[in-house]
Each structure stands twice: as structure tokens, then as C-alpha cells.
Amino acid sequence: MNTTALIRPAWTPATIAMMVVGFMVFWPLGLAMLAYIVWGDRLDGWKRDVNAATDGAFGAMRGFGRGRAAGFGRTGNVAFDDWREGELARLDEERKKLDEMREEFETYARELRRAKDQDEFDRFMAARSKSTPAKRGKSVPGVSDQA
Image (tube, rainbow, N blue to C red):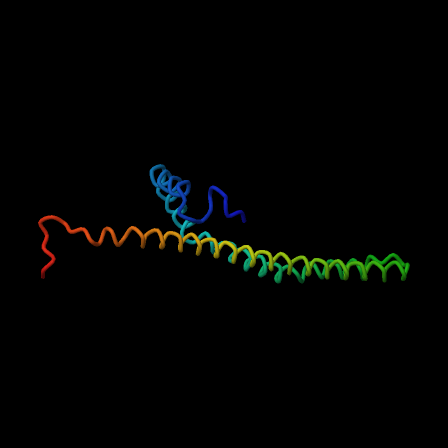
């Protein structure tokens, strides 16, 4: 997921505008946009969990299909059938490695986004702390500080 995308689950001017327009056009659209802004960052984990669950449920069907092809669709050439089974096993291992690498990269990207958000927050707090002491010294006319 690109963190510089215009529409991402964050309080950006574009998402706020889309939420306001959504509320003006049809209130469930605005509510959906608000939910996306607030909980959209959790969609990646939810999608990954759903994909893992469906892979587990349908994995048996995939295995059944391969087993059936290997059991009933044999060519009669034992060497070729053995080679084909070996290649399918090798490809399964490659797929597992690629899935692990993808998961590692997604974790890395998530941590990078978290670090960027923390950096932005720290800059905001530093800028806020610089401007806050000046405001504290001012008093409101007509209001006494004594209780």
C-alpha cells in the first residue's frame, strides 16, 4: 500500500472532503468514509486473515485436485510422473518462500508507516510546545486568575 496515496485511511484533506460530501449526498456514504478513515489501517490485517482462512479451507480442494491428477492422470511414464511430482513440490516450496517474503515486506512497510507517523507526530508536538508557552502567559481581559 502506498502511503502517499491521496485516499488512505488517515485524516487527509481529501478523505475529510469525501466524508463531508458523502454525508451531504447520502449519509451512509459519509458514515462508510468515516469508518474507513478511523479503521481503514486494520483492513490489511483483516484481509490477510480472511485470505489465510480461505486458503486453509480451500487448500484441501487444491490438494485433492493435484492428487487426483497425479493418481488418475498418470502418463504411464514413471520417470516423467516422478519428475512432474518433484517439480510441483519445488514450485510449492517456491510459493511458500514468496509468501513469507511478501509477509516480511508487508511487516516492514507497516513499521515504516508507523515510524513516519511517529516522526510527524513528534514534529507536531515539538511545534506545539514552542507555540504553547507564549499563549500561556497571556491573560483574558476581565477574567481574574484568583479563585
